[in-house]
Length: 166
Image (cartoon, rainbow, N blue to C red):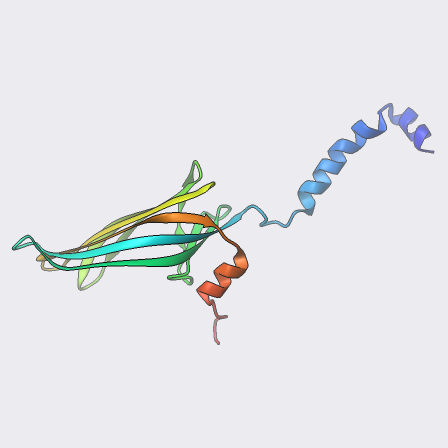
């Protein structure tokens, strides 16, 4: 029976099956198998407050911490365990996710840039500069570190994301 089918279609069995096999592999993968990337990043952050009138540093702090990041390449969104409920709209280029942030409230305003190498995992960088509304004090925060591949279970555990309403 198989030989008769090949005679009718005039195709060799392996050649006719290869495209079907390849497409079945593609569609059998979970939809988000490659859309989500999880990272564990070890970072060092230096924050500083400078009095602009006297040009002196009033406060300087340094801390090391571990953060976990989720990058959704399909939706161009980035999530961090520091604020898991607030995704960031990110730009993706050459394996790097980045975004700019502008912040303003009644106390201060500023801008920042953030980038993380995710494909392959590598460096993470963040710099934020803000001034108080009277423009007498400037606040800076700069983070640098290295990221490694992680997984969704670790991200969820570290983010401690709770369902809405609970």
